[in-house]
Image (tube, rainbow, N blue to C red; front, side, top):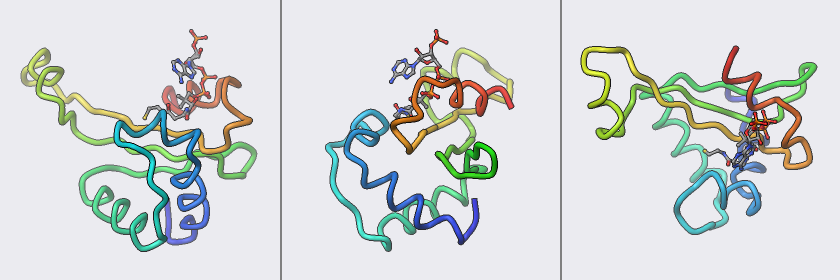
Length: 104
Ligand SMILES: CC(C)(COP(=O)(O)OP(=O)(O)OC[C@H]1O[C@@H](n2cnc3c(N)ncnc32)[C@H](O)[C@@H]1OP(=O)(O)O)[C@@H](O)C(=O)NCCC(=O)NCCS
């Protein structure tokens, strides 16, 4: 993920169909500055990626240390991570891209 990706991140984070599944909070449209504040904070706590197919951005994900106590507690002393993932282009759901992003 780079400073060139704001257009995609703004679009995906403002897609109600995508965000109602990705975010437990009620959908609310965001300004670019709000999206930037979220990702800039996350990038200090996680590795952030853009998911591409044939060089075309279709989604984003981030990998961070597990922050859910109920899960971290099951693996004491182990390096447990959490992935948040969104395929932002809804018409591409169900084609295996999410799976591919996770396993790569
Ligand atoms: C969830 C998501 C990342 C999966 O990516 P994808 O490319 O559509 O999924 P895949 O084609 O790789 O399918 C992976 C598996 O997840 C299942 N799956 C896909 N979307 C799902 C959903 N919303 N809920 C439950 N299971 C889902 C598929 O049925 C498939 O199961 P199978 O392997 O047993 O057949 C994508 O659909 C998405 O971005 N959805 C909206 C946002 C979201 O829900 N993000 C996850 C929470 S942060």
